[in-house]
Structures are given as C-alpha cells and as structure tokens.
Image (cartoon, rainbow, N blue to C red):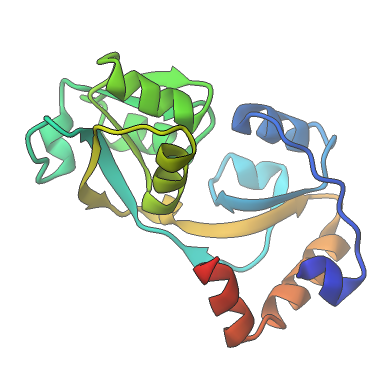
Length: 185
C-alpha cells in the first residue's frame, strides 16, 4: 500500500529479528516496517508516528496454572527471541524472571512445548499464525502484558529523514477502510 501511494519500490529482506536490527544499525537496510521504539534503537533509527498497537499475552502450555500477574513468573523462565523489546523490558523491570534467548518466535514456542521455558510473550495474531502454520497445539494465553513495546512504528536509518517523512505521509494517507482491510487480512 505504501509502495502504491508513494511510488517507492521495496526490496524485502527476510532474516532473524536480531540480524535485521544489526543490519539496520550498520546501514545495510533502510526501513524496518514494524517495531517498538526503544532508547537504544533511537540512536540509529528515525521513527514514524505509532501506527498500530498490539496486545501481548503471556503464553504457556495448556496445563500451566493461570497467571494473574507478571510477578507470578518470578523464578520462572521466559523464552524471548533475541532483540525483541520484551527482553530488555523484563531485564530492566522484572529481573527475577529468567530469560532464555532464542532465535525466533517459533523457537520460543518450541521452548515452551519442550519444557525448556515456562512461558513466552507475544501478541495473539503472531502466535495464532505460527501455531496454525506449524500445526502446534498445547499452548494457551494468559494475562495480557501491556507495556510501551506494544506500540508499533516504522523506522528508517537516521541518515534518511526524507524517507521517514515520505513513509509517514503515506501512513497518514491510509484511509479507515484500507486499515480495516489490512487488519481483517
């Protein structure tokens, strides 16, 4: 939709999140289309305005007792993909939670299923997609986990402010109906 509205053409790169962050920091890629804003990332990225907010949940095996609050996970292990904003948030705000760093969200789900971790944290859309795609069962959502990392942005390299402005203008131009079509898809 942004290509259509701006005339820009994107060359999409698929990689692990940690590698994409590293490549953006090293100016090897120009745009990250969806990410949380952090102080560290702001050193090498320019953010658009927030354009979506997701609701993260704590996910465990089906058999795990219900989690009422994040403190219920103190002394437990949470699998988090390397570079995800939840990792730094938990380290800074809940140091009593052990973090198992994994390469991807599917690896985090696998860690929960195989008892290497007690839980993982993500939004239901991504977890549901991965569960269906990989035919996984035995995972359930618990308490929602809201924090600033739930607000998502696009970001460009710091030396490309014009690109950021073009992207922002296109985001501003997306109609309510166009947004609904995207959300429903």
